[in-house]
Amino acid sequence: MLPTPRGALTPNRPLADLTWLRVGGPADWLFQPADAEDLAQFLRDLDPAVPVFPIGVGSNLIVRDGGIRGVVVRLGRGFNGIEIAGDLVTAGAAALDAHVARKAAEAGLDLTFLRTIPGSIGGAVRMNAGCYGAYVADHLLSVQVVTRRGESHEIAAADLGLAYRHSELPEGTIVISARFRVPAGDPAALAARMEDQLARRDASQPTRERSAGSTFRNPAGFSSTGRADDSHELKAWSLIDAAGLRGYRLGGAQMSEKHPNFLLNAENASAAELESLGEYVREQVRASSGHDLQWEVIRIGDARP
Image (cartoon, rainbow, N blue to C red):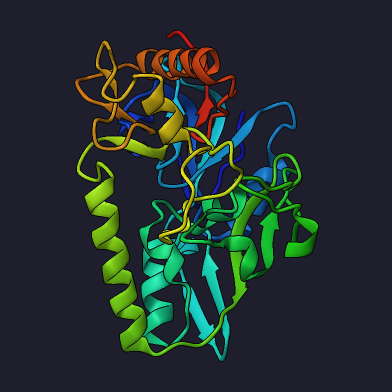
């Protein structure tokens, strides 16, 4: 028996349509809380033995074909607000990164690096998302969270262990909002910078394909800076390309021709095909260069229906 929340609680909910790769089996339960109090009360009353997994907009996620046992929590409208006061930006975890960047720029605040990052603020915090030499960690002051026990409290950014594509959020913690201190900029100049970033992204990445963004972390330990002097020697895409895997295909899964570090659902791929191709790429890159690529895309769930 599960608690009865005010939000939507759906049994046996397919998850493929909630991920950018459009794969994956059902969750035992999908919970979409009405607000933070609803989320806290539900988790407080939920049997501690029931697993809980939060997802955002599914931009960095492979749900395996057998689906997810337990409760998947997906934050929605009650968690997507954006508030700006002086140099502070407070964004709900469900607010899209791109929307936060635009709203901040309109107020003369520079969060432009978020403009081209797919996903929402909760995931950006968890992964310390970044590009063009800037990261969430550079601006984050604190996050508001709800724990697995249903307790709500604030965690300072300094206590999150933020590093390249890494955070140390306590197990079971769900981020519900984040607060940033942001440098000022001219709104017109910030808008122009974001347009330039979008053009550069579209020129180099398969933005019209079904992907989950960058598949593997860069062994270099940092994102592309976008500068002319940026080194590509230890970038994941360069190692994959050198291994001869640009455009390589397994069933309906494919490494992008345009950007070899993008794993695509090219033709009705299963989650198993996508993950198998990723593991094959890791094996071949390890053999050709000695580098052990680490997944950036999160993989969750049971392998078989």
